[in-house]
Length: 139
Image 1 (cartoon, rainbow, N blue to C red):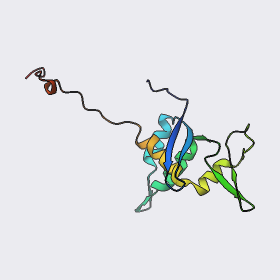
Image 2: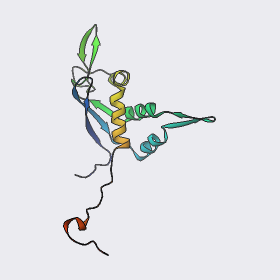
Image 3: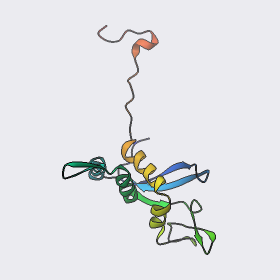
Image 4: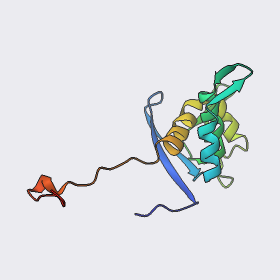
């Protein structure tokens, strides 16, 4: 399947605190955002280097987060759990959904950022012709 440039996708994360699979919808980051993410983990302040990895992951994860699946998150209202949704058409829509997630589930936003910005690819070793009994070219 080809990589769709731009557009949106869904990441499914196993949340060990709720023992549920959480669905986070996100948009693909631009090249400029990827560079900003990679440069933002450390910050020079005078003669010191500050570690900003956590803040940077949260900031960039929130930028690309576009939605949550209905029923994956609840907030307490008058002591009772109430579903929240990012979908304006849902009866559970909360216009402040992103801030609620930021305040109470930053770990999941950081996981999203790590997977999208840091773990989006891996190098695959070419298959060796020698492994199936054939000699490789030049040997």
